Length: 427
Image 1 (cartoon, helix red, strand yellow):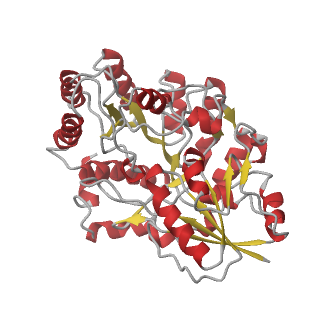
Image 2 (cartoon, one colour):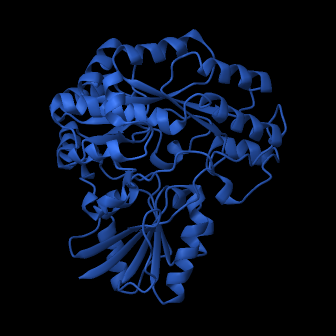
């Protein structure tokens, strides 16, 4: 039996924001691709400690964020110094492959379904390749099976007594190609939905009632989206997702299926955005605005007007970011070509630190506006308090449909915002 030690490196959280940890999705999706004769142990360094003397045959490091890569390299260097072979995979391995190769025995690029048996056979025969490159060569989407959530240490994923969401995906790829996004490079510019019966089969295995559907966008096929929501209704899950369509028939099914809140990009001060937020709310679906600052078409006045606008459209939460020019995006290519990137420390590519020269202001001024945006939106009610309101709402729904998680009753004795019961009664 081969022993495979799987590790998810820690990263520094942004200052001033509510800090909590969600169970990572990529590593356990990868673990489901390993052959049955491989024994997997998993450590999420954000909530647990790595044992560098662990008894294992090979170490796998799964990285999602650019802010993880330098820590991932450090971990690999320590294991390799002890004679262990290290293989890297995951999103940020694909984005930083050349640098990662300097710290790896092997890097795996692309999607792992149906491919790990051959990789590990190479390892057994001492023929591990330096690079396994499957970028753009996607396995049949039908091969995606239930993630290995049994590898999580459940007790580590709660925030002050509140059970955090589990992550799940119903599709891969994205037909859109947004300026700052690397998804078209990573997963292809083609929407690849999982068969709905397969997605539902996995959802039925998840014992957590609260989910984050991490698909890049569910608004890519109306027919598939509506069918997915129809099939989800009996499961009584409560879920968060990126964009869904705001057609009445879609929103109605989404609400029945347990839509809790959605992320909505707010990129201007138009009535379209205001009405879209209202439509979500009309169906009982909360909205977290995602606001990207620092694009070339934004002036200081544009950003200040946008911040004022956010206070008027009844967002439940807002998340502000500054443009982070990740490798293999058009933003990166443009800014590199124009000589505008001045900071190449990947630890700073956290969407909260300015690493390039904006077109219409200084880097220092953009950083000030970013910090001002957070302070302005949460000046009357903290991010944690607003989050608590959303959790109170979902707990009320769980009480109504009989899926409430009993351990959350301890919240009344926890210092997480205001008293749960009092908040629920106000709804």
